[in-house]
Length: 229
Image 1 (cartoon, rainbow, N blue to C red):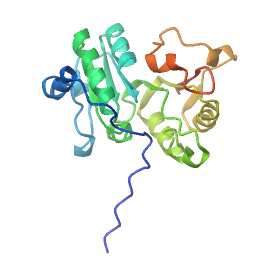
Image 2 (cartoon, rainbow, N blue to C red):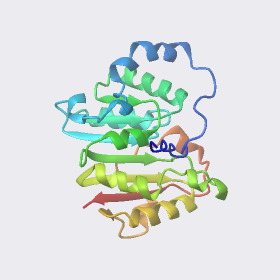
Image 3 (cartoon, one colour):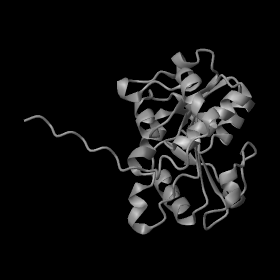
């Protein structure tokens, strides 16, 4: 008998759409998105070098929200390829507006689950991974839906280049504790904090977004920075 199909991973994000997308942003799904859409990871491996051959670095932002941080980093680092993943349609619409207004040519978007993209990337292909304020699933019975699980942490280590950086930020203390525990157990990742200020103080290149300003969590932002050995 053939093997039973593997079950997809539990969804790590909540709703995928809220209010109606504004007409201007909706138009960008037809005019701009086709030219900057990431290849479908279900179709096979993704080669970042083919997406931007002259890129000096490749960054991945998982769950870019409204795209403010992604666009700001892309503008600051024009020679880096910025891959952004976000299943929330309104967030993708907002990101498209930021890309258009900034004239950004180094951004590629995936309007779906980032885990499929990571699985399709080659070993040691990313210089940076950034996960900012992922869905906290703060009720205990929902913790299993959190993005940072042991298998996915291992996948992140796999796709990071030696010396590459992983940044995880949350404003929920128990999620920070859980993520730290799991990332510390991930072979190949080294936590860079040496003192409390290292996780309490935003890194110099951090971009504060409207979501962060809402202070929806139970803690000030906690910044966990790891290096790939």
